[in-house]
Length: 199
Ligand code: ITT
Image 1: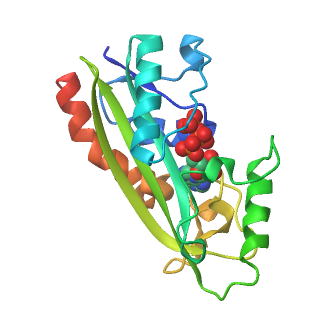
Image 2: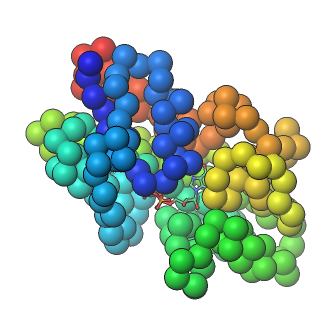
Image 3: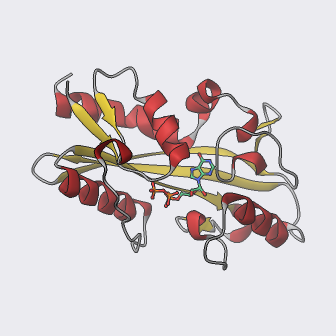
């Protein structure tokens, strides 16, 4: 079977990408499945650069066609920050998702509501001959001052879809994978994967 490496070390992303790509006739592998321990330095200044860097590094290390995701949360009251720095949005080394959420709420508390925001995901696919294909997706909502829901990861418990009155962490996988930035990016990636793999 044709193999695709899901080139991320983020377990939340792995689960979502496995579910989003399960309809394709591909064997989906994770870095753990092939004993690949690779941490790529994300020193780009755009999502595209970081996503491409991750896809290339994983493809070179594994010899497999690789799909990488670079994503982030853009908060309008912070002029789009933390954006591509979302995973590192806390001054303390070793900070966890919960620390980053608390830090974001602390920094937002004196700003007028609604705290509108959107998630962005860029997906890069390394094709043979070092060709890189890039697509993206966004989803819009607002940050709320208390955590709701246990699903998902990262900033999901404080990101509300106002029209559903549910946070991203209150959605089941199937619902998040219809609405999320990552779902939209994958929708754009599917025709590219079909072409690369001849599906
Ligand atoms: P990889 O680089 O190994 O893929 P990472 O977690 O470092 O994993 P990013 O650099 O792309 O990935 O950082 C994205 C961060 O943005 C992520 O750690 C979360 O804090 C946040 N984020 C992205 N997508 C999210 C989602 O669907 N729900 C909640 N938070 C999300």
